[in-house]
Structure formats: structure tokens, C-alpha cells
Length: 258
Image (cartoon, rainbow, N blue to C red; front, top):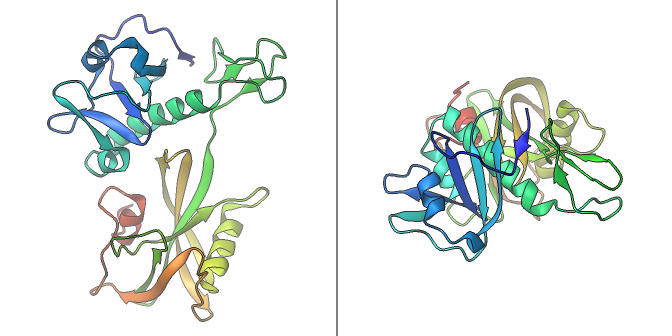
């Protein structure tokens, strides 16, 4: 299956319009759809693509694009929190493609403008022939337990008092388990054992694939990485702090929703 940048028909195709980290929605919170595209000036569109696998269309709008009448821009994470897993997967897929097409326009080897490949979800350089695929950044996220207690952390960038699961990017050459242990050590100085895979979620902010795990406390005292973590502590399940919103993979880990 491939991406195409010439939409031959909009009829019956789920269409998502994005402006940076926002998605255009109708009243009621559903994706605005193709009719919104028809009400926008062509100069508002940066890139667009149709995914021949899902039949969905993604439209990346210019930063100053206005919302058509009857529509509004909503933070894309908020859209995630109010829709089911299947809809989130479709929206995340198209958001990821739009991110990639907007950010990756030229071949990093020779500088020639890229074009979409005819049969793969990739861009190809007409000058040197190299293929370029959408960027995906693998991340681990883990909920650590100690008996009836859960380790939850508050990020330094948090302004709402939300405590979530420990998470971080996988580095070059690491296995997921190695990345998990390293992130736990870096952010809390703890050791863990009995790592168990739980599930995953596409999280296109901008390009993450979140891979969720459960782990058990194995030793150490909490010493936080102050550049990343504002607070980390153990909470009993019957006395949890403010948590991430439903729909996030962190909330699913905490609620054992796998």
C-alpha cells in the first residue's frame, strides 16, 4: 500500500485536518472532514495525502489557517482522550504522515526535493534513488509496583499536578528491556525486575510509538533526576494522586486496562 498526494475523490473517506498540534473538529468533537477542506482557501493547505490502506486522508494546514464556520481547532491529545482506540489509530496514522511530509521535503543525502513512492509508504529521491520512510521514535513507558504500591512521577513541565508512569526514549542499540532499566535508573535510581509487556499506542507528538510494560521494584532508594522529574513517590492503589486522562496509555497501565 502507498500514500498518494493527489486525492481523486473525497467522498466517503475519513478526512483529518491538522494545524500543528491541533486537529479541526466539528461541533460534537468529531473530525471536521472533507467538507471543511472545501471551505478553506487553497493557500491554507501545506501538504495532503491519502493512505490507500485505510482510505483516510490527512491534510496539514498552514500555521495561520483559520477554522471554517461551525468548526474549531482542538489540541490533538484532547481528541485522543475522547475517542476509541480504532479512531485514535486512524487519526494518529494520518497525523504521523502529515508530520513527516511537512518536515521531510528534501533528500538529506543530496538535497533534491522528494516525491512519494508509487507503491510504498515512503518518499523517494528522483536524483539519487534513496528511499525515506516515516519517522517513528520508540519509547518505553512502565508502571512499577511494590506490593500494593505504585511508583508515579510528576514531570518538571507539568503544571496541573498530574502524576504519571515513568517513560523515555529507546536509544540506539538498546533492547526495550535495557531502555526501561536505564530510564528507571536515570530518573529514580531504582532497580526493577519481572518486566512484562502490556501493550502499545501510537502517540504522534510528534512521532512516538509508546510501548507499555509492567515491572516490579527490585531495590534502591528514590533519587530523582531533577532536570526531568519534579517528584516521584509510592502511592497506594486506594490513594492515588491526579492521574493522566482516560485514553492515555499511562492511564490504561494504572487501571490495568490491557
